Length: 53
Length: 226
Image (cartoon, rainbow over all chains, first blue to last red; front, side, top):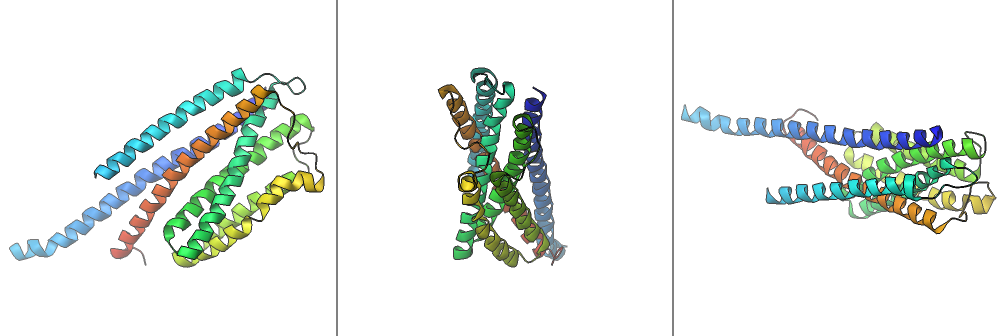
């Protein structure tokens, strides 16, 4: 019974760890992309703001 | 924006379906499948072992086919599919070796033996490891994709070896053991469920690789990386 539990626990932990890492990495990449897009937006609007001033 | 919302809803629905399938599969393995007379409850490892072994082989084949498509079309999307399939194939092969070893300890009284199918499976695991070693050691995306695609196609040669090893080299690994029809049905349920889980994980991972490529291209444009 212990062997059976170990086998299923191993599989469960491996798949959950991969799924958890996927979710965490997805979140990190999305935040990074948002930050880069916001930065790019600021850079593009800077000359306009400068001219207006 | 609407397309993104539709995709998100589809992924949520697919996740719900896979979670339901997993619950049914758990019930089938632990409650519906009859207890095997010789090995007892430990025999239930087979339902997991066969499913992950199938996942490992399917991962290797998908990795090779996607790699060939990349070499023909030179579209990075195929490289991402190849990487995704390789990752999941490696995960499944690791689990195949681990669950097989646990089963072997109960059935053969040893954790490992250099049996032909076990050896071919270990070779498959090493080939996956080599594939990712190549991927992580090259910075140029185009060169990385090309070289790893060649390796992924070469890896296909091990698939028939894993499947036929026991027949060709007269190993002791069970080939197609006699099974109660209920056991066979549970085994099929397990393989279908695990395949659905792998497809879902593959779609999520491939989406993530697309996002990572977008981040990389933005960083390059901003001059953060070369």
